[in-house]
Each structure stands twice: as C-alpha cells, then as structure tokens.
Image (cartoon, rainbow, N blue to C red; front, side, top):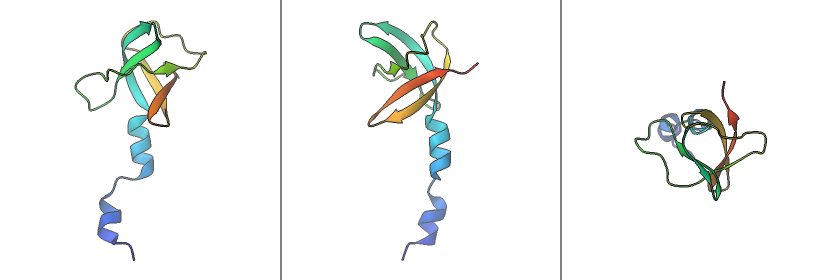
Length: 81
C-alpha cells in the first residue's frame, strides 16, 4: 500500500514538466553547434551544450526557449515570443 502522505508531498509530473520545459539561452556555440542554457531557479547556466531543432536558429543570448527532455539531456524546440 502506498503512503498517502508521500504521494501528497511529491510534486506532480505536470508541475515538474512545466518547470523543466523553459530555459534562457546563456551562450551560443558554433563548434559544436548548440546553446548553453540557464534553467529557472538556477543561479548559473549549465556548461552542457544543448542541440536545437533545425527550425530554431539561436541568434541572441537571453532568448526564452522551450526545451524537451530527451534521455539525460534536453533539446531546444524553439524561441518563445
């Protein structure tokens, strides 16, 4: 039997997904191609270079982007206008 207290105190999958699907472009890399990202609630950008869909060309630091988790990483889907 599951402990109802533990279930009630755990963040829902929907809340976790919303928080992790937004990021800000911290830097643009040409080799390898991609961007570094700063996620909400984090003080520093992550050093990982994330790949972007071909439909999004990162142009400026500070772009607010939508990301999706893929395996142990993220892929940038595009800029949020």
